[in-house]
Amino acid sequence: MVTRGHHRGGMFRGGRSGGFRGGRNSARNSVFIPFQPFDIEHCEHHFPRMETETAEDSKLGEMLLQRNKMLVPNTDTIATFDSMLNQMKEGLMKLTDENAETEDKCIFEEIRKIGAYSNETLIEGCKEAEILLQLKEAPKLEKLGSLATEIATIMGADYKVETDEENSTITVSNNANLRLCCFVTCIGGKTKGV
Image (cartoon, rainbow, N blue to C red; front, side):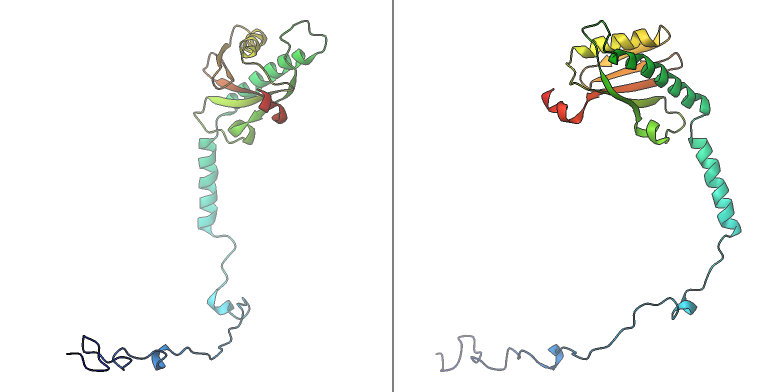
């Protein structure tokens, strides 16, 4: 039998059994406690000044310079890459001459270093440098072979020229297996028409 004012479980409706909301424990502290802004002049005794340079710092700097010399390729490697680039650049820029008697004439907008070769961050053991061959007009895929033939003629028999039509690259390598990877592209607005 259920008596008046009781649940079936025997609890009073609206009684004190559930506790009450907003008791003393849940009251928020409304007192404002001001905090001073951080000032190095007031906190200087907590942050003692250090010497500008110690013996350990000097030794660490010497070790970093020594490590950097170990990572940077020797000057002969860089000079070889520069020589290959200059030889190729001089020959390719002749193709931009308006009086060139060839139907496959390629007019270059820019020929420059890119990647680690441009940033001078090549590391020892790296045998490949990257350059960009930017054309004024969007090249057709079949023109990649003719451009590679022109580069082979410019570089001479001492260099090997290979093409990769899938990635639109031409690789030029010498007898020491140092390679220039040439990315063929065009001016940005004309890539949509390729």
